[in-house]
Image (tube, rainbow, N blue to C red; front, side, top):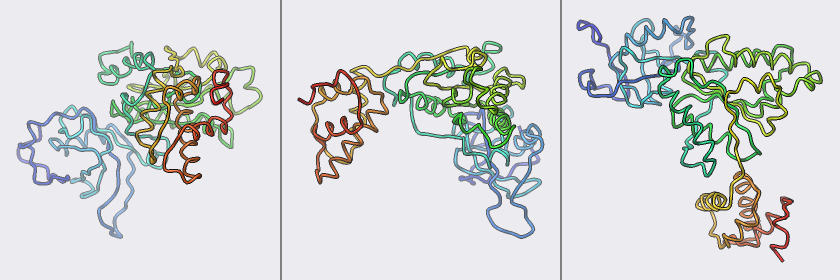
Length: 373
């Protein structure tokens, strides 16, 4: 604990609390902070700071913030070298807990803050995902690992591949997983790794994994990985792809230790992947199209938020949408039907609007034939 002759000045959203009053609080396992500057403007002060050694910063921060209660989206202040310099609490695990001598404190550096476009946070819960029982069952190992990384040792999951037709919930599941575990999610489209100059792609991959390591435990999600990690026979058609693949292999192999970092990639066509890349995934998890019961649940869940009333034959709607993904049900069927009803000055969505949605989206499904006759 803090030495008795030097009590820290506590500046949080509840400044009157003192350490003794917080002794019954749960200890924080991880706190991630982001520098945000001073609460006022003064010409002699520099708003930006540069962290040259994150390990030293962690010791420095833990020593002065020992005993403070941390809540996400609130602020704490430096009281030593740069008094009143503010840091936003991005992650506190668990939330509303107290910093102890064993709390890991990570800082989002300037480089990360400027490049934060890949970092994603959502309110999606695992319970929001309909179906995909196999996928939700298999990710339990990721949940257990990120909850207690030290217990796994060399058996830790590292690289997981999600595959299946578009719109079946691959990205949604990753967002829900990160949200449930309260860990940072770094989501990137594989196509965005392709730069204008040679070396851009490998540099982006290096920065991506560096961000994840500095803010571990964390999850990296590379969507549409087949856009770059395609079979070697095709890589010669795009010279920049080979160096991207090589950089990706280096990071996935953990040449630099990716402690407490899970890499999840997604593809619609796993057979198109380069074998060297595909072999790095210790687990491949398939995402399937929803069955009748699951489509009914997806439709009902989405209809709850409709801005118009509806009068639909749900049994018929389930049958005529056979073979559609969850995204198709929402975006191509229900949304189009809603827009069609509004365009026709209707206050209620009917099967006629659904008929229009089916036809306008040109869905070809042998099972649909004759349903509107």
